[in-house]
Length: 491
Image 1 (cartoon, rainbow, N blue to C red):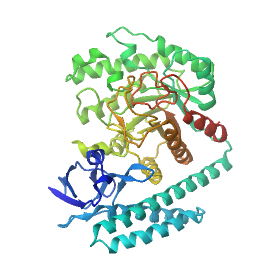
Image 2 (image 1 turned 120 degrees about the vertical axis):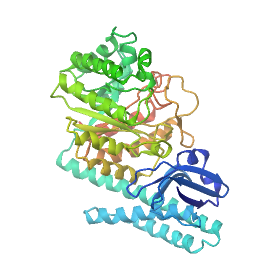
Image 3 (image 1 turned 90 degrees about the horizontal axis):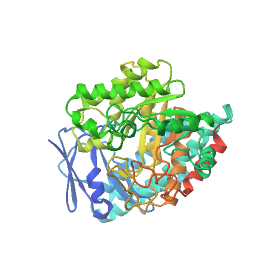
Image 4 (image 1 turned 60 degrees about the vertical axis):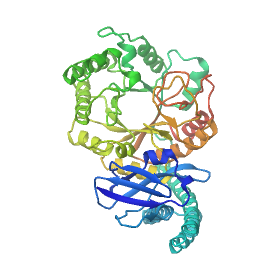
């Protein structure tokens, strides 16, 4: 078993949440299953492999909270690494490399990012040469991290702005699909006006548990009502996911067949067949399946979930050979691999589908920003760019499915056992995160769509407080920011 140890002079930088989701990963970023233990001031990581790798851990940064940071590639050694120094090295190494790559590609780099990088490097050098006094070294390394992250933000937002400007010179108003999940039947006028200002498309989710509460008896009224509402307003419609085995979407009677995969397949494909037959010709994109790369409510092996995903695509294609079909993937960085026995990372799961040439037209990335478990811990903006670049290697359009918390505490409408892991979540903080996320994702040409997965906190949803309307159906500030972005940049 491989072992790597880290000295943490300031234990408050790593919380219980940080220890829960820290992991070691291969140089290409795929997490290894990792066992993390803490004995003040040493953090110990064990894994089955003994190759060199990167250590990822949520690390407390002033004014940012806990960000998932990583070291550079480290070899195993007897003495522990000083963790703040290695995290600072990782932040500055990624920043320096990306800066040079973007300059070589023609980006006009302003003065701010290089100046901050130079300042951060000075602090890092002091940290690296004073490791004999860990507390002093950690203090300098922390300054290097904080200033380096400021430089990363400046550089990434500047890059996104320039890339968006290039795209808009070619097409003044981009045709990016900008959608909200329409959970509401016959929405009121205030909701309708706000939705139309903000989105140029809509997502309609056919909740199987509602449609077929009793086996063989289907009620389509809720879906029909939403489809009619969209058609009356000329919206393009993303229909799905048709296969989502989360607890809120799975009929209770289906659990009677848990363990009988052949019977499960029959019921699942029959549901998909009836849905496609009913809405074919009115749907512009089929979302075949969602989150099948991660844990579901039914006890299924990884091979069985891949098999069901393939079958869901095939079931759609048998009925409708023309409408684009996409598949979405949960936790696209693969954070969950550090705590489970998995063979396929999200990217490898997607690659298997693409190589099978099943007729997949695009890939969805489920980014539930700032939630754990089941979501993605926050990262710096450069990691968002790097994520899109990695997934674009599969040569298919990408659609990002987003949510972010605006509060904490009890949320009776949330079905996922997840919690916000950001400092003092609020509508204002949700707004700040949304503005940055949308700016980065929408600038990338590979991103053909952005979908806000949860609109109303008052309606049943997955992640707590992730809507754009609160529990009293009052619009949050993030909704107006999305509307302003759409007005300026999109059709």
